[in-house]
Image 1 (cartoon, rainbow, N blue to C red):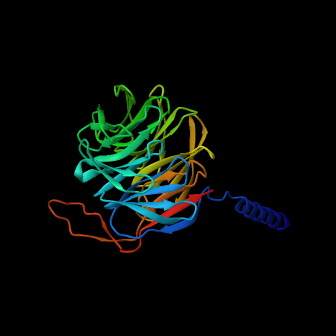
Image 2: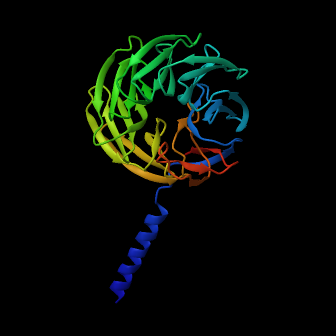
Image 3: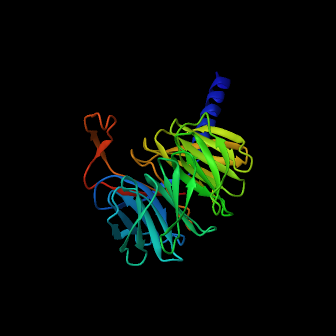
Length: 341
C-alpha cells in the first residue's frame, strides 16, 4: 500500500508539474480597437513605418493611428473596397474596388480621393512591390491583373496569370508569388517583365487564399479553404509539408521574430505553426479570436498581428442570385483585434 501511495503521489506531482510547465499561448489579445460604420470588410495594410493601419471597410477605408489606436480618418468613395496598397515615396495609396473594376488613388497625407483607374475584372488584393516600383491590382476573375505606375496611377502593363488571383508575396528580388484560387496552385512571375516563370500545384490543398513567405528559408505558406496549410519550396516547387488549420482561412502571416506561421480562420481562430527547420513544421496552438476574423496583416516594427471582424447575425434567405448569403452584421460592432506575444 505504501508503494502504491508513493507511486500515486509521484504521478500527481508529475501531472501538476506538467500543467505548471505547459507552454502559454504564443499570442494573446492586446487591444480591441472599435471602428465606426457597418458593412463588410476585407484586407488590411500597415504602412512600412508601422504607424498607420488601413482597413478596407465596405465603401471606405478606415485609417487607424497605431500609436493612439484611434481612427484618424477615412478614404471615402471606394465602393466594395477589397485591398489597400501604400507607396510613401510617391505620397499615394491605392484601393481596389472589386465590383466596379477599378482602383481608387488617394493622397496619403490628406486621404483625399484622387480618382479612379480602370483595371482588370474584380480587383481584389492590391500590392506595391518596392523592387520593381510597381503597384499590382490582382484580379480575382479573368486571369488578367493590372500593373500601375505608383506615381501617376497609369496602367503600364497587364500580367496574364491564368487564374483567379488571391494574395501575393514577394521575395524582394523581382519575383512575385500569387495563389490562384480556382487552379489550386501558386504562380511565380517576374515583377518587371510580367512573364510567368513557374506554376506549382498545391494539392491536396484546395482554393488557396492567404499567402506568406519566409525569404531566409525560401518557403511559401499557402492557406487553403479545405483546412490545410501547404508549404512549398519557392526555388524548386517541391511541396515540403501539409498541415491542418482552421476553417475559413483568408489570411496567412509569417512572424520572423518567432519563426511562426499564423493563419486567420473565419471560424474564429488563429492556427499557429512553428517552423522548426526548413522542412519541419508543427502546429503549436489554436487561439480563439471571433467568428469572421479571417484576414491578417502584421506590423513590420512590433510584429503584432491585426485582424478584424464584427458580431454576426443570421443570414438572409437564399435566392437564385445569392444561393449562399453571408451572415448579417450587427450594427456598431466592427472592430480591429491586435495580437502579440
